[in-house]
Length: 210
Length: 131
Image 1 (cartoon, chains in turn orange, green):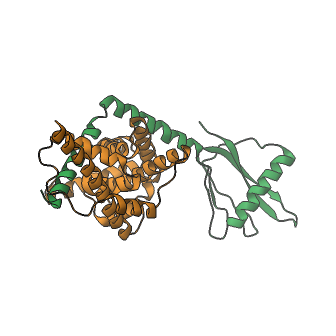
Image 2 (tube, chains in turn purple, cyan):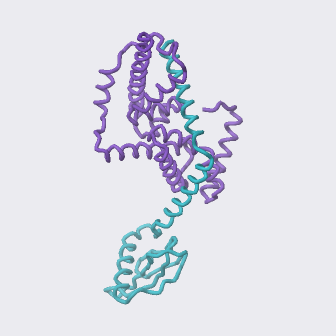
Image 3 (cartoon, rainbow over the protein chains, first blue to last red):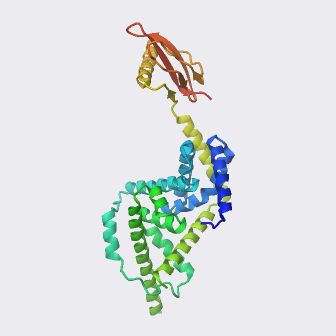
């Protein structure tokens, strides 16, 4: 999230509003500018959810095509980015679900998720699990932990930690109640924590063994 | 390090990962992707069905009119397509079809005599598109 002055925020909003109006009238350059502004962030999110560059490109494509089609109905109650993020996140999650169905994998439901979180995650946070670990290793561990999460948990972590969305915005994006968002975020964080604990335990074991 | 500090560092690293992933898309891939998007938008436009706009209460008339159109065409053969962007159509027995948006399709309109001698407006929308 960028930190901009209120004036800069207002100017950016006005510029975007003007672009949207032009894009709604079929102005290709305006639509291209909106694409140039946001497609990389959308791609990054899509890649984090679908975990495959080709599929992530497909998600970006579908999201922008849907956005273009629905531009006349976009009223601007949220920013364009939140709106297209919502479209793209849902396309990405659908994509993962279709892939799972295709692979005939079992879908993890909320209860199983809760039980897993309760059984696998310790309640006490380690005193200083990050100390002495190289940032690159930590980054790799976080990346791996994120990839292991089910997509609906990955989604809330990305929206909260990367995009800085409010609970209300997250609820709007995923079209679920705010309480569901809070619950998912809680379980997602605990899973991340559990995965990272395992990583740090491994590091500790390596150090003791050497 | 407490839990808050851990969360903060984790969030920072997640943002770093997202930024790197965003940058991993080469400019030429961005351009190609936009071309793909434009092509897909064009395809969508081609596949859009033509819209028919009626005055309130005209929905039933629409169905009658379209069914009649199909029947007439079956009986008398396909009418010569007359590309019309917007056509004003009226009929005396309460049919309130005032405008037809053929979209990108060819089409025409005419009237026929109904079972009770009433005049029915027929809107014919061809299934091919104007280029």
